[in-house]
Image 1: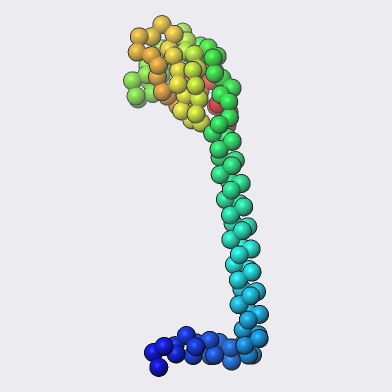
Image 2 (image 1 turned 180 degrees about the vertical axis):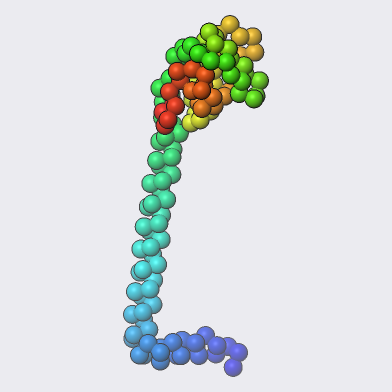
Length: 128
């Protein structure tokens, strides 16, 4: 009887849905729904990954620009900027900004866009 378990399950299911023809329809429709759901989920995931890659690979709009520091600040990672200092943006990657402190000796520095916006006119709020 051990090898009849699958057969017994199929016949029980067929009886519950109204026969083998109805069971075949239920299986086909269920399979179609699962495939369509997976396809829709896959398309949404692909769109999300594509949008994230596009944002990540967006050009740095502030690259090469020189900003004046208007208030003293320290980012906690060794970068100290004082009012009157200047820095040049070398590269951006989302919130991470690579800068050159003009006249500095330990260049370059990685810091956050939020820190730069707090001490200068660096644009912050979705743009790099």
